[in-house]
Amino acid sequence: GNSVTQMEGPVTLSEEAFLTINCTYTATGYPSLFWYVQYPGEGLQLLLKATKADDKGSNKGFEATYRKETTSFHLEKGSVQVSDSAVYFCALTLGTGNQFYFGTGTSLTVIP
Amino acid sequence: GAVVSQHPSRVICKSGTSVKIECRSLDFQATTMFWYRQFPKKSLMLMATSNEGSKATYEQGVEKDKFLINHASLTLSTLTVTSAHPEDSSFYICSAPGITDEKLFFGSGTQLSVL
Image (tube, rainbow over all chains, first blue to last red; front, side):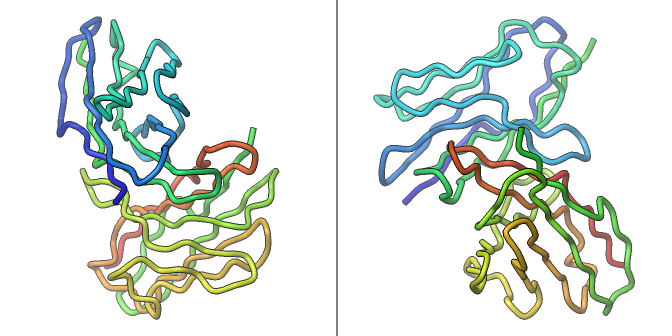
């Protein structure tokens, strides 16, 4: 089947620390991979995506590389800020208009 | 860019009443919309997929008679929680897939509290 597994939180970091949130997936086809971010009391916003193997998605200093060999899409940021505090969701889909499969979400808190 | 508008953002109701949540695609047509439920500190649970002009497809374990979904037009889908009970209290989020790319556009969510 199709599923996404991401590291459990919560994660607490000091400002300017390095962030990694692990995400692995299983899929019956060739998925596109996504990271969504949810700020408190809001819906989800697309953070970045990658549609094929070895693609790197990046946005707002966050990066993730589509690794087919390890079926992974880990999220990284070199220096986190307080404003990055949110819940991050890894997700996959098998095509436009198709269902998305989400991980359980990882809560990140960045302290000054 | 594409925008999905969801209303209300917050609703408090008495047990036994029904609550309707609206989800509109503002500048694009959405033949499909997804309805999710989010529990505190947990992931999004897909409840159902609404399809314009046909019946919604419900995920296993979701009560069709309790969570009524109507996709009245290409820009509007509604979720009605009928005879709400405290255990229905949750954050409900709608989303619509992009037409030209693989992307989901999310509404801002509705926090339902049933007293």
